[in-house]
Length: 352
Ligand SMILES: NC(=O)c1ccc[n+]([C@@H]2O[C@H](COP(=O)([O-])OP(=O)(O)OC[C@H]3O[C@@H](n4cnc5c(N)ncnc54)[C@H](O)[C@@H]3O)[C@@H](O)[C@H]2O)c1
Ligand SMILES: [Zn+2]
Image (cartoon, rainbow, N blue to C red):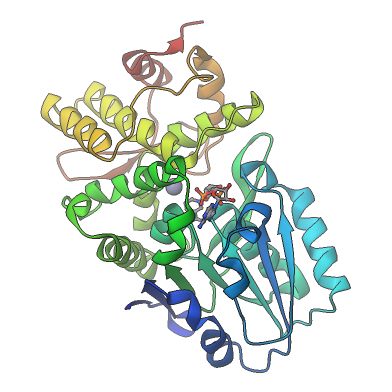
């Protein structure tokens, strides 16, 4: 088992990575949420039906509340429904919420924890690769609005996170690929060899990189924004996919977004062809495509531009994390013509 500390002063906690890590849940709750008398486990319907789910034990009397699986559950309506269920379950402010699932569940349950009784403790058992390498760590919680991804949320740190790699045995191939898409960004964030490590070491290294960034900048006033590499276009693609009834995965969108960020950086004279080729290689080596998946080919580029302009990084302009001579940095005031031009280079996007 590998333990990675997230150093945030009095909000510090550990992330435990490895085969069987979820068996430490009861001990985690007992040591980190002292005084809790009951727990509510928040999960989704697919995870609740997994063969290993019956072994999840917070060590206290608990109820399970399962939301529908997938990104469409990440809404304000689900937050209200969950909060009402917590109230009916009699969960007190001193009790604990346990998120068991992927990034949708940890974002939702974490946000609910941040507002229920003005703040209740929560822990996470991360059950997708994407959640283990990123979503469960760092305390960013929230839900989507029809206007864009993650527009509503709070910073609320968990009391601990368990990344049990054995639970990934039931993960479908497409979700593995999506997790690799999120992992690919760490190849540009300090670990070029991330693809070569064994699974547990790979997850732990991603957690270390994320923990170091979050520890230095919990509320994203500086360095933490770099974790959004590839995400400006990715979030726009996800929002467009949701609006069109599609099911684009977060990591699939990030794969496209990383290559797009390289094309945009080249247009702005920040990097050359070699770096663009490196981005394509990394994305391909992780088994992802830089092309838009079926259903999103032919998407209107003006629609994407509107989503990108509403991105949280943008302060009334178009802002992107871009590679350059000094590595990754946040670049404000990117011209809409360049944003659209780089979309054309990506292909598959309608020119209207
Ligand atoms: N808060 C953050 O810092 C952060 C970072 C990255 C991503 N995110 C968010 O995370 C979300 C994506 O997370 P995700 O990719 O984990 O999606 P997800 O939670 O929807 O999980 C993907 C699918 O896998 C299923 N599943 C989960 N664990 C399983 C298992 N062990 N076996 C079988 N099936 C399993 C789920 O039911 C779901 O259908 C997005 O909403 C994204 O915005 C948040
Ligand atoms: Zn992401």
